[in-house]
Length: 413
Image 1: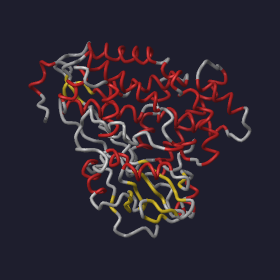
Image 2: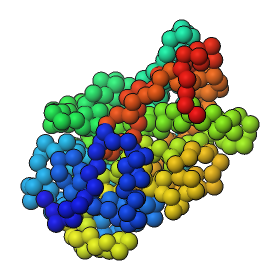
Image 3: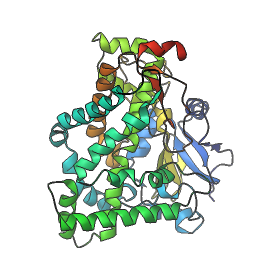
Image 4: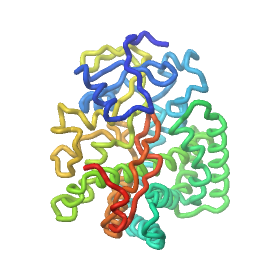
């Protein structure tokens, strides 16, 4: 589909992310040709510096109309990753169109309004932990399903002023889009989500409130250029982006701490903070494995590689976090490392994650609350990583909450 080199490295969503990162970086070239599922070829950035260049480059746009193969119909509509490159909303727009829609939303995610959510986030965390406290101490608990998932879902739904069922009822459709599998009915999933958010907008018009959805409806009605369908797409983007990566951030952190008890001890002794844990997790096990997709609007040179106009470029965020040229012992989880904040897990440039303050705050509160309530939490079994090109996380994360169960679950050092 593209004149990209034929020796492209195949990105396998079922492969080990750490091994893949090492393989991508093994050539020493920070820009590699890769093959995505479906035999779609692209370039990827594999180092921290190259990832920052790709994510922030003025001649790389997220508008899929700039992708030659997409525009000319060479990319089939049932390509498994199609929802991740043309999913609507400002995430898949470029230039002023992206900036205009982003401005309508940005105010709600600034530091002051997010800081004001701290008591509510803590209350939601405590409520979920209260429910876990009533379970049998000898029964493993899926901490993803019962804590890491519902916490950010409740928070983002409260921010938007929509019922929690807006996320819960659509969960299977969300997962089809962010973790596409062969045979998934992507069009049906997109249709179901679009219809649900259109109905939510209509309901909010009938009963407006002091929430972000009402603010967005009012802003959209004052801008003749914005269509109703775009508002539904933006709400979908806010809901899915407002919880999916945070779920993985929390579970990846719990998993890392379970395997590195000395790092947990550093937090408890005051040598490190929960914010440090969050940053090191973002570096060590980025919830976003590969950032898809940007397209060259003209021929450009990045790290000595010429990318031709119309070619797609991605950034391997997991690999960038483990860049051995930037991080000493990059494959080691160390919450006190000086370079723990040097990552691109939230992106870079114009598309830098809008909810970065909220995600960091939710994760820090979640981890502190969880380990304060259950200081002896440990893995009940080694979890399976779910197959995904774009995300990195676990299908479930079974844990024992009390020390008495430790003999049942040896954890590798």
